[in-house]
Length: 102
Image (tube, rainbow, N blue to C red; front, side, top):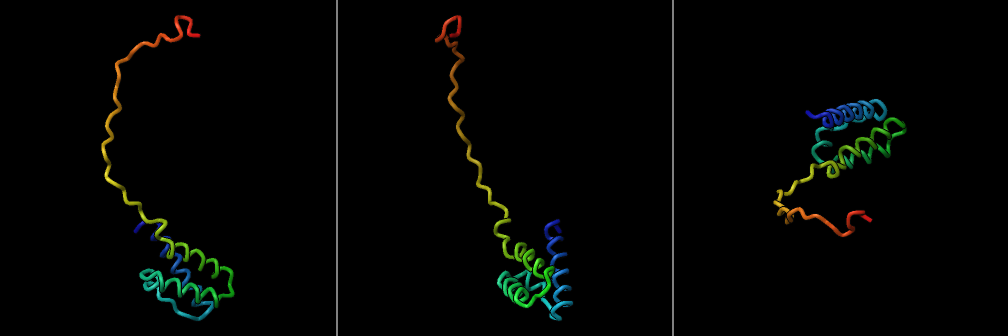
């Protein structure tokens, strides 16, 4: 389990306990992780019912983590194509400015 996944699991556990304490409701964490639409619906519902600032902050943090994975998705790398080497010229001395260089 990566550090980001572990942090998400901690946030979800804290969220479930906070919802149970303040709203006396149960939240299905597995469904929230598996289905972004389900997560959005649950977070919207809890946001409307919440009176606690900490719970609202938790809703915002979970919304960032669960509903925005596309921004954090690894970028697909394209195969490298070989770039032809620049045409090399033999080293030639440049005498444009003469011996004084000016």
